[in-house]
Image (cartoon, rainbow, N blue to C red; front, side, top):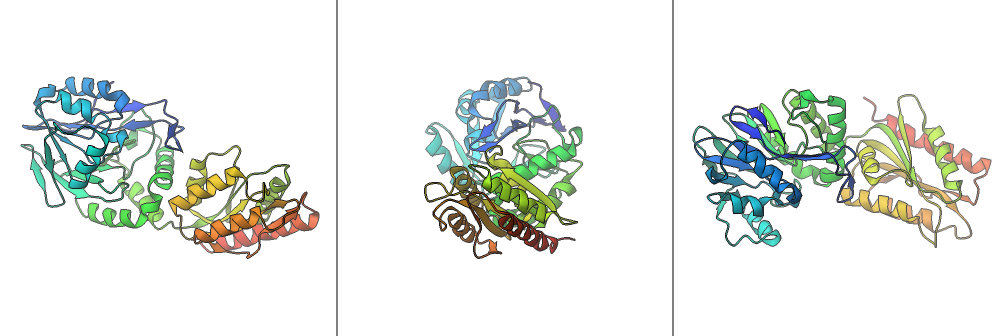
Length: 398
């Protein structure tokens, strides 16, 4: 696999994974990259490794530029195996290397791998590491998105190696933002934020404020393209996503058994189609959780529908709500809806309770319900509910 010059004596030596389609439940429809960076100086340093199956690609990329025996430092910004998986092989082959990380990362690595023979250098926010012409500085970024996460800054090149911050699960032949379709890259960055780090918005805000006070020409994440020409765009979006800032947008997601709940969803959709409002409707049988989370990130209002099944909600609706509850989106208004047979107070009320647990602003204290097939009167109520969602969403129009 071809290496790439990032800037001067800094090289990308990672792996492009065109085929991965699942990242612990995250649908990676455009693949991913595992970015590793090599700095050639008096002392040679590697920043992060790649997923374990691709260790040999990493070693070959490094060997194409330097001898493995010349590597002095291996910096680990994050212990998660997609970044650290090749460390056991790397530390074995780079016999003279010291593993550089923070104290929490050392502890995490020791719980993943046999580190008894590794030599560690522990760093924190006050540490610097001279490589010769270049100096590395370190920024602890706890919960972005594990407790031990950190970023590494190379001031002489003005490069921030930002770990999972600003990343995208996106396989590409180009290594830089200007080489790829910006609309697609920003969409993948939004998807990454929504599904990986939305829960940690407050921590990310602290880190963002800290990191962006330094002079940066490039942001080099551990997944996806390197930000060079479009830093302002991705930073502006991160500021928006951190706040979970709602757009005038309504998202409807549901499952259906005999189409009754689907008919109700259609009517809610029709009612929500007011000028200036974006409306998205998803049948969960055909929509992955990644899409639901991404679309919910900037939605002002959501409607969640289920028929009653065994006195409760449908499994796919339960799955979607569990996933969203874990990501903790904020500032959402919501309603519950759906059909039932003989037990009126069941599945839809379960949805309502979960929405309350998610701290949603509940617009209708009772779900919009239909006993079996929705009547014209029920569908009229659904359209009214859709209109209510849209009116709330319009309050967020710029």
